[in-house]
Figure (cartoon, rainbow, N blue to C red):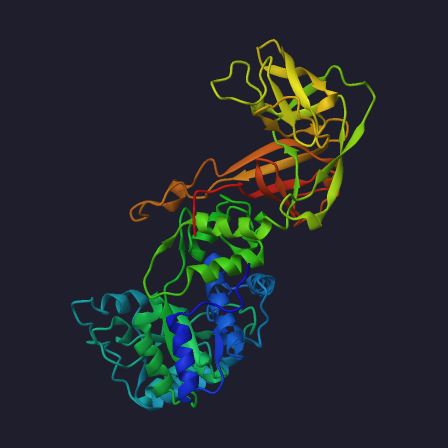
Length: 550
């Protein structure tokens, strides 16, 4: 199913031209997440783009953690990101942290101060924000903008030594407060943050801003193609300014593409963290989350995600991708891999009155009708079985071909059975069916005596394995504009339905991550966290069919 290389796109064309012209000799890309949360499907697009681009041109890709904000970052996130990248099938050539370069970044800031291109500002964050200007009005210069080089060096050293409180001083670039690009209006380079850093401990109490650190990291690592999402396009002039004025030996170049937006979900780490913190979901790996760990727990495969990322391509314009497109690729990946078995999610007891008591026979069933190489299995059949509750109706509508009083259906892999009687409880609820079977109609026997229109699935009661089934719907109920409303108000109250039922005995010892196609219900994954020996928990990955077409 997988293509060997990503399809052509404008970034790939740029790389091809750069190599042909001799502008670069080796392609070096990087995937630079901030370790302040778990990766989501949008990051998967960037991972695939950077790693596959470098692989195609026999280059290198670094995994780099942009850990410039100690307040929000944690080792837990570092380890989860490494796990996700590996699970997707990629190996980085270099593993780096922005914090590895804090010493050099500090020295480059001194270069700017000595050149008269950076100054220490005493204004508060609110004052700086208020004087920044707007898209139509220029900003106002700080009253501290014209401090001498010597004073700025001394103040920046004092910042480094921890002599100021958080927010009391910042180091700003001195560029142009009247620039039409707001990002060039003396942006902040360093701020004071007295916080423990996951990698450097308490060595530093000043930290570079991401916009200052990122181009320096790319230059230090010799990155040739720094691929970012479109929201960084306006930052590119500052990116180039930092590389130039900090006098970096290697000059990287930034290129922007449209990030992935998926229907019926949120793609902001801040909002995803809010869902976790407010316990609206069961952690970062909740199968309803668009995180890579959530998709993995739900049952998505790396092959399906890579194929999806290639299909959506790389473009310059924003768009929203239908979630059903992602579902299409997991169906395509699993249709020849998954064992096709039977599970009853809402069981209704059926007694086959003319089947011998105490007898069990083992019926042969194919494991995957589209992949004969998967072979066959044996399933038990006896007097008492379970069927789906919605496979019986006492007063069915027209063209209902499943069980109702007097009707006959085929049990998949087994026999024809006919409903003779429905047993009700005191409240009128059907609690048991009495049926008869025709021993001449055994599946595979070549019986041609008569036809039935309905086929239903079942599980033998004497060998049935209790199981829990978790059915998922989109986390967000709609795709309305989030402006003016909390996205939490749009959470789908029906995003999770939990059912207790039964599966075939062969699935009793299923391991976390095992995948099955349940007749009529869809593709399911054994939950790696909550399954217990003898009582598996199944997450529905996706239903069997979709109206979406690629």
